[in-house]
Length: 340
Ligand code: UDP
Ligand code: MG
Image: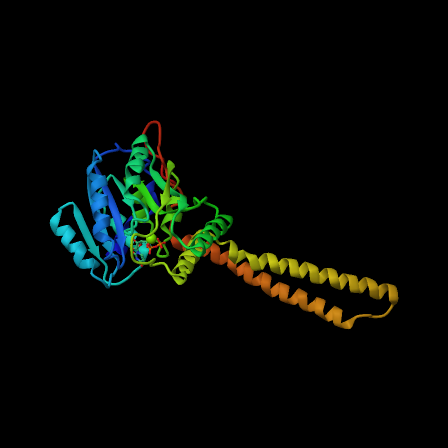
């Protein structure tokens, strides 16, 4: 169903309207992905509602239970029973953090949506700052981790390396040290909803979107209880999704490497030919053969890279991202003229 909805919306023309910013107020949705968080849920809920009640907005909290195996689902149902502003989506199994966020944003009704982890590593007290920036007119307000407390050096080192490598590879600037803790305006959510791709690296998609983006700094707290649901294996998969959905550069590497090998091989052959011309005799048959081999393997490598070049364009087409997004259109008609 969600897929059908996505593809129905996934027509590039859908984004051409450039309606411009809407009034900043009304309902705030808070999306919380939950996977086996029974130890922290009640504390999280209490702190979250405390912060939200102090805001001059109405709010809803949307918990997405990502196939939890512990008591989280029952706890969430109780929270929803006790407060009509709380909604819960239970996944049929564990689909992963990024899809839990996606489902939450899809189901949110708010004029703005905040995504926050369930383990209190992202302090809810930052939410008013996010909202304040939103009211200033920013469409995306992301929370940058100025400092991480209580995470292993390994996690910190891998995260730091990951963000830096990613930015080397990608064309869109994906902000460093920013997780999924952020506020998004309704129109950003609508674009996100309509992006049809399956391998979703949400923070990359949001960066790709543009619009007015601002950041707020915060100190990443240690997990309240329980342990990280992102073991190395999952982090690797996230990193892979991030790279493959935002860069086709690795696909072209063989082309460059192959081209270099071919040039080097030919240069070596030329050198041997020159030597032969001078000495009148082939001095180094083995070297000549190896140079010829270098030319051949280089050619094969380059051919693979050439295929990668085409595969990259196929990927771009298949992902079906809109060609462009209009922020505002000024002047008669108030709309960008559609390209035909
Ligand atoms: N999470 C999820 N599905 C998963 C893994 C994690 O919904 O498969 C949730 C988790 O409950 C938490 C958030 O995503 O609210 C971040 O996960 P975690 O704290 O384990 O990651 P870390 O902070 O260690 O990167
Ligand atoms: Mg965490």
